[in-house]
Image 1 (cartoon, rainbow, N blue to C red):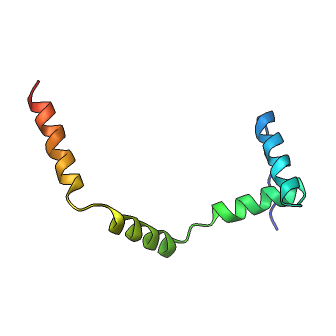
Image 2 (spheres, helix red, strand yellow):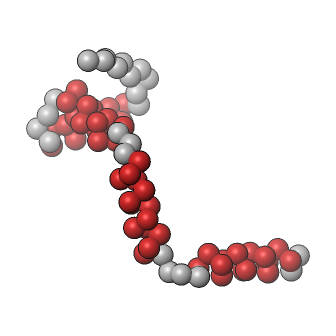
Length: 77
């Protein structure tokens, strides 16, 4: 397995990470590993599903209305 060294980590970030590790009953290293594992893996299919769901919740026509408002404001100057 690979190893990673993080240098120049802000003291406040380190303290929050230690607090989070304690709350989750893990070592500091295990907490950092869990955070990295949860956030470093990009599943394109999962992201595409999330993006499609997000788009489906948007109100139709909003983008067009916004564009019209921007053009109207730009043209008024």
